[in-house]
Length: 156
Image 1: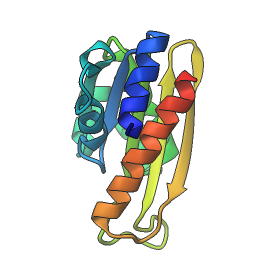
Image 2: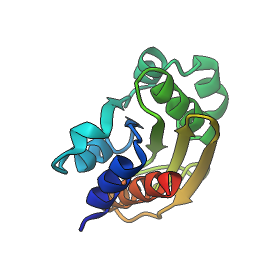
Image 3: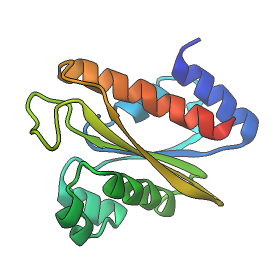
């Protein structure tokens, strides 16, 4: 059973509804979930907010927050997850914003991904994972698996 299949099964058991807000993964988390038959019972919607404008317009992220902290930050990840929850029928939302590569900088290196997890009636959690300069495909793959694990943990 794949991680996405385990998540869908757990979400069905708990009555959870999921939303995603993705930047660096471009919808891959939503794609992994919706690859699973029956996911329509637990997946409400996914927001692909690659640009800062999309983060602001679709999720309500304050442009001043992006200006102050940068798009790749836990502050923006938090706002993205909370925006996905507020703009959906979900009970839990995951967000990802990061630098898949190639490139990056000394302050924000390739492989850094910030996650936000908003859950109705619980405080929003954030974390940053340094996957390293694995290459774009591998950073995105690792970020998807981590997002699925965070969602499973939230529903357990």
